[in-house]
Image (cartoon, rainbow, N blue to C red; front, side, top):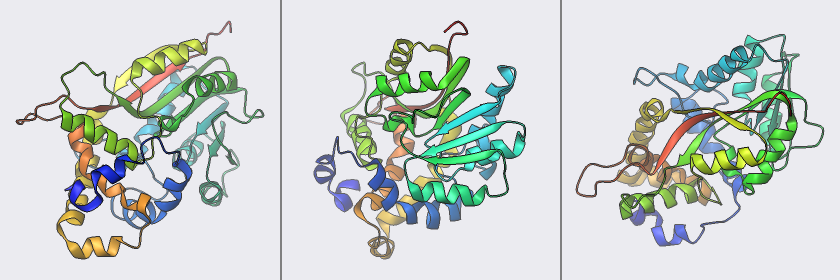
Length: 308
């Protein structure tokens, strides 16, 4: 289906291309006129976490709740940073729930920052800055906790990013990551699964490809941060992924829907590729082409030593 509509070989020619900013610019209509309108909540650009296995929009606040729990477990926080904050959904939700904590959101796109600032106009404890986390601006430091939701996968220089995050933390601080990770390759993945993983990376503009959890742990350790917690959240995003796949099937099977989608730029249209493939990629296959999942969705927490 993907090959018929998008030409797989043509897509794969874009492997390794640095298109993070163009991808989000070209996907504005996809997020605002489809994802936010029919599935998620205003300002949301990530997956829902539905722990009971049933899709519910409340799940889009699951990552923010997870960050809040880390704040509680570390005895509270006074300064919190979100990298790749998008339109500010998580930062704003946390700022509303924790009025005594100062939150800062950082995003690469000026349009995202402008929208986040507008949505947080009445919040005195939330601010937004335009810039890259690779590296973080020098004046962003002294944080008790830094977190990223489905954004650090875009890191080009993994070591530099980890070192930048470590620098921004106070001793005893934590980094919380909700993101997609490459599952270890042990020779049991089918060729279809390997190909689908590559198409997912191209479709979302992940230029360096997804990294395994082990690679993240190694890079964080080199930066002086220790793994505190690694939790596989894959099962909890599946209800969301299946909803997306249902919508994408209509795109492939209805020429009228495809005709309407032609108003989207190339990178925006490729969201139909990722939406179709994600349940297969995260669940694996048990048919004639049996294969373990190609990727997983995890929550990883790292700590900076108090004596650092």
